[in-house]
Image 1: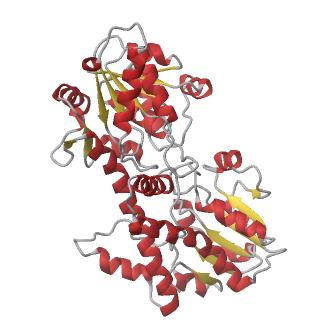
Image 2 (image 1 turned 60 degrees about the vertical axis):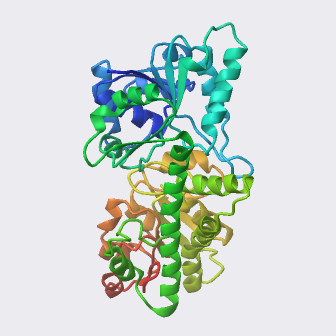
Image 3 (image 1 turned 60 degrees about the horizontal axis):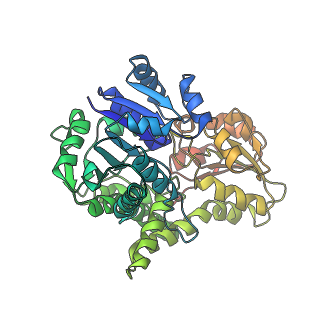
Length: 443
């Protein structure tokens, strides 16, 4: 058992702390946000993540998991401190490290014996050096008699998929740890020992390589998505079916089938921010990430595709037309709406004069908070949202939308246009019911 403190209780911090408690460690999840900690202390979860609340309840009951706003005391009580605070995108697209630096300073101010500082947040290459510099500067300016030998810095990037984060953490395909000393490595082996299996090794490397691994992984996935979206655009022009193309290339073992689904662009808290950050980091050292920049350009174009398909059929002026969006979250099984494709679609539709109905009971609360300027209609049932609509635009592929009753929808809608932004419907079946169908890269 290792005593662990997590600083920051967002997606990464809360999942990390809860899952580490689940395997027997003593974990304190800390955050300066009183509202968030009060929610957790009241037995609720501030984020929607399947399976997380159940694990929180279980481990709080077993007294392996506690919550506090007293970050200094939490640091003093633990041997390993995970920094899981946000790294928002700055003005020039670089990652803003102010919260990471703040945790490093608090760490130094409360050092009371050997401890390991673990960067769990997604941070650019060189952050480990910045953290060490911040800690040393704080120690040198204090009366605390501690030196560089009394702490170690670790880079431990997360590879969690929102909507499957608990499963990913408990059953990792790899655990990447960047370290400078054997002492720190041995302690991290104790932290992650319960997760190590033949198929999920701990991969030790230097800190800068670990920091880059996270950015490189997300950039690679973003490039795959944008590549397939470009293929889909070409399929639209020549009459090919992008889903068949994806199946054909995905069976190649050198390529594989994952992240080959064409759609309306990637979003969320990671891909947009991380690919922009690595491009900016490259500029700072004179390196031009041409492929990654192209992936970003394709994604910007892809955000307009669905509305273009609507206006191609209904006309540029959508005044008086009702468009119903199914889904607001950037992906299913999460309430995260950061950089969600729905934001861009709604803004375009409103600018063209459309009346916009939306349905997504899981993500609605966050969407309203993040986009109060949108004058749109929220519904508690997707059939109610579709009544008298001219067009159904599928944005998020929630399971309930896969089994929608199109015969009922045909009776409810005023128009007959289906824009399938995630290619989950059978075009022939939809057309046979009298709908006009527009997919992404298929007819």
